[in-house]
Amino acid sequence: MNLRAANEALSFSILQIVASVESEAAGPSYSVTRLASTLAARGLQSGLFSVGNPSMALRDGVECRVFKRDFGSVPVFSNLYASRDLRAAIDRFAVAGGILHTHGLWLMPNVYPSWSAGLHSRPLLLSPRGMLGSPALEFSRRKKMIFWRIAQRSAVEVVSCFHATSVQEYDDIRRLGFKAPVAIVPNGIDVPALNQSIIADRPRSQEQMDTVLYLGRIHAKKGIDRLLAAWAQVERQNPHWRLRVVGPLEGSYPAELKAMSARLGLERASFDDALYGEKKAMAYRSASLFVLPTLDENFGMVVAEALAHGVPVISTKGAPWAGLDIEGCGWWIDHGTEPLVRALNDAMSMPRKVRLAMGARGRTWMERDYSWDGVGAEMENVYRWCDGRADRPKSVIVD
Image (cartoon, rainbow, N blue to C red):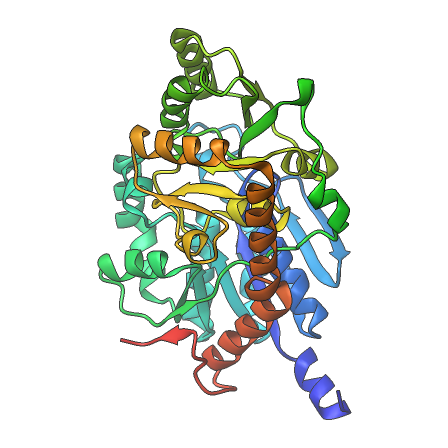
């Protein structure tokens, strides 16, 4: 990079704004953080602002700042993640000529950027992160409608460009009548450097059983109840398989699922609290099959993670993974218990070598089409176009 190009890169600043990155179980905690570090690695000024326990650090070249949450002890208001300090910091960033990219909806960190973008005529990008899907909109619908009228609608109206991680999310945006351009760029994935011998000789879990794994949020929209109902129909015929559900177990819904498991008389279904880091990676490596029975996803990061670890995947059509069929690394199925039963029976009856070959194809797919290098380059093109510095990228749809 010559001196002029280097100076131009350093003057080009992008700020990612997200309510929180404290929960490792939430997809944006990985995808937004990793996007910021990828942009920094490309020589751009990259920042990441969120709300939580106040801190300031430079991590992987990214200015990471966490701002104090206001009204922390006030019911209802505390859940909005309001922060005057965050609001002021975003405004300073906009005044300095930065580009604002907010992730998610329905919280104050998703509103503040629109105020600064409008006031200082700066580009604003919005990644809905699955929050515009029909099932997602139905959860707490009344609260969302109130917040929409008070603050969120005016915030969306000044968006320069939406960022959708799939065609499915693009359709959600257009279905709701939003007219701004949409960049369709998937999340990236870090493909672990697994030794091929490990893939070829994947360790089995306890008592030499093969494992069907669900890993992610334990939430009603994830369809785990359907997975349990399907497992009840296949468990007895597959004595060398077990079902493992992994995710944060606090709250009433995990208790409801455990009660459902007991009512169904499931003998080889377990519930484990959320896993992170190497323990999470080990859960993937120890699995023979991954299942995402979700009602609705904008992307489904856990599918990419499983494939990156060489695990074939069953996913409902609530997630945008038609490529599972196309690439020969899994099953993309209709909603409901019976499609799950059929896919599970199909997968578990396969010779182990066939499943391993499917997983290897999925890993190759992730390396080819979902690398962070490619995603970061395309997002940089989108930012430059939004700022009037480049021609419209092919990923941006204007209609």
